[in-house]
Length: 171
Image (cartoon, rainbow, N blue to C red; front, side, top):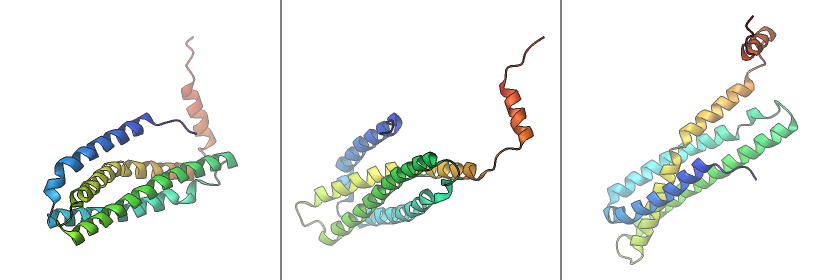
């Protein structure tokens, strides 16, 4: 079990609380509002396509085979965790789209519709907030891949860098 990322845990907790507030307070604004529902469908369709690209980037095996088998196993474990998170996010996107479809099919007539709308708003808000971290994740993945493809530094440059890290002796 790896160490717990406290910042990620805080962000997740804050996102859950904020999503609950959004679902409760803004449900009356989307009740029967087809323009708002169409906007949600558009946004989450775009996010789903973007997430497919992220999954493709994360799943690319460029980092493997560069070092020892232990490092490869660690890399595979990290990729597996990220892919699992992205898969869950993609499934939340699809549930949001399915809930919007159900809301549009059933209209305002049912007693459970406000709860369905709240659930959709909660999931949409949570998924949107979680999606804010995707650009940073893509950036980190690309940097890792670029660094893994970079060859070793020339011997003279390595020696110069070692010389800079040593404290200079004064005579």
